[in-house]
Image 1 (cartoon, rainbow, N blue to C red):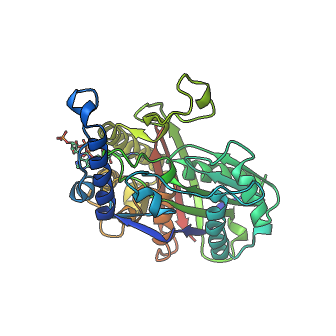
Image 2 (cartoon, rainbow, N blue to C red):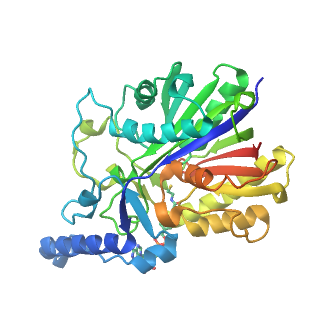
Length: 373
Ligand code: COA
């Protein structure tokens, strides 16, 4: 058995930023257009009038101040409200592969490795841009990697579930060097026309390199253990899928073909589930929470993270103990905890213990206990 370690990480950040104010301005223009276009039906009581959004509400309810997106124009066009991506030919890399490769190259550079040294690529994300061939295999080709690749989808928990799979394979010796990459084009699944959730998501790609600790070329994080759990819930759901055209209304523009959630219920149910999961994982490892130097949590809602941090540590986390990046990136699905890890781990001292934790649809929760070496 070998000891797995995270030896490098990388983040691709799109160049377009949308502030809450810009988002609300376009959303409110969309609402005004909708209400005028549907005035008769609204007056007859057949259609519900849409209400304006507010930047103050967004910040207060979520902690989000802005988000990055691959295409700003389409998202902010009040007559469109979703991104424009050009049609790529089958001979070109897909858009997920393109942003994934950027994050992979950064992670490999941090690990002092080249793509040819990789023998496993896991593309772990909330959405895949096509059914097959696996996006991971295209990324594998782009990296010049050997071995094999496969896609995984556990929604917002995809990164930690991917890390568990890769770490277990490194541990057993079936692979030597893995890359787990999370290209999250959440702007494609977000319903930008829904006031309850239009502010939630942003685009990004993250990657981590996982290999034998004995092979690490520099500072690294030993993966002590991982723990994944799932429990079925309909409170976060997207019904889009390959059977879409078979249904009576075919490919109609239906609300449930995009991200849907019952945010309040998610908040209430997921916070205790995640806190209990982390505490049980720490106990199983024979560690108490006061041994935790840092928690890199999933980035969905600042309030949720504040609750989880307090429950796990038994006190309000000190500044820097539980870094949030959601104010800048919003919810980037599976990538959130890895952005936090990538940006806020260099300063840790040898022997410091940290915990990466992601959670979300399923419900699902995954945690990874690491030690700086
Ligand atoms: N602008 C202004 N007001 C808004 C609004 C908006 N964009 N969206 C909702 N409101 C209003 C609602 O109509 C409601 O008004 P009411 O009290 O008069 O009925 C009020 O604000 C509260 O709405 P609610 O949906 O209960 O807000 P919330 O405090 O639960 O915050 C979320 C909403 C989505 C930020 C929060 O529930 C959340 O983050 N949940 C967890 C999300 C999550 O982790 N999801 C996982 C995805 S991976």
